[in-house]
Length: 282
Image (cartoon, rainbow, N blue to C red; front, side):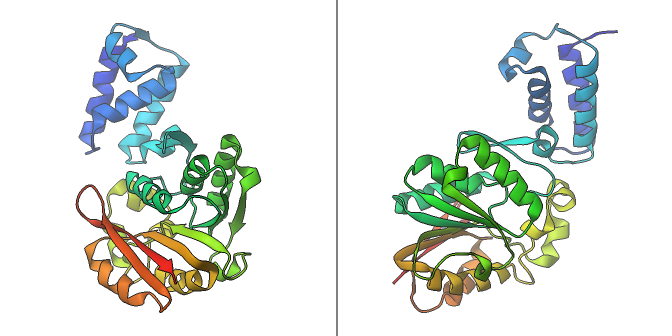
């Protein structure tokens, strides 16, 4: 028995609403448009479209997974970032809008050359910078093999493999780059204090990789490795830009920077929360 699209949509929205999913209307529209291969506007203009069969079963499964608070982008297998559609899957951090802000600010200071993306995850930062800086090349690093696999697929689809070395390693010292040769280091490292991770929203705490979230007791362990390494690796005038976890981390990060790393600025996100910090190698 077929079911009109408008009724199916209403039932799916009710299902998601019961479990506290934010924006259930949007999530259902994205699920429908993904599996039907149509736009959201088409869905709203064709409410009487009859539905049955295998596609309906796939959509029911997707809604069931979303009811369990699995992130929508894992269910769909992709995420928009910097005008691109990148693959994501369990074991890889889902790109955030705040990280597009990191890319935007870094590009304002970077005309081209060699950069390192430390903690590349899906490769979103690398893909964005390489697309906007055709003369740039990159070393993209991650501690998780599953993330390296996803980044490889995204870089291959975007045609960037000839300008990027993917490196599997957990410490900056493992990266094959000579001292004083890098123009830019950019990083969205784990910055959430360990004790705060379990209290994150279920989509994050249950499903996203803890290794991409947990920054240690105070959320700053990755920066303790990254800042001294950046001083050794950046050329004079080279830049380090990082994303971090808000106002409580500003002063510790400022005090953590070694001599030779001059603070450029701290940038707030659209909510007015301190989110990005940049240094220049002197």
